[in-house]
Length: 150
Image 1 (cartoon, rainbow, N blue to C red):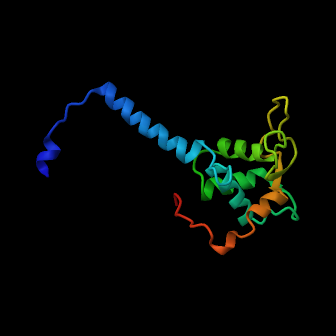
Image 2: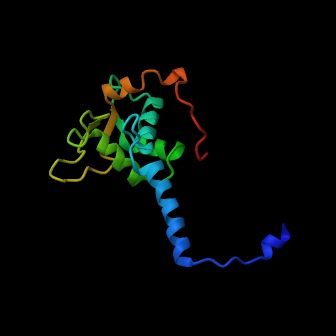
Image 3: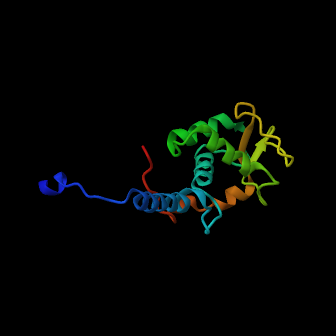
């Protein structure tokens, strides 16, 4: 085994970069960038909805600050920055982006004309009725949960 550690293998840098980048980019596309065919959601969307479910943000409850939800998602499931989480949450609340919005937003969540949403400290949100319907049987262990980054 020590022999292998001391041996230098010559590789064509251009070929190695192409192959390595292709493998990496495909894993990113499959794992994060493309919505899942089963529900049309990306992992960040699922993490937002699950966090809202855990926090009791059902349609019959009061709205809660978006900053609280974004912080909970970041702290528990999605260590990729607050902007990516909030942008995804805003999109889930826009009736012009989603046929059936999964987040019921209160405040400025942007416009069809391209106006940006207000900062998350100024908006509030809870799950929509259709999001609750999607999560109806979540406690029946129909989906295997895997450990996250904690």
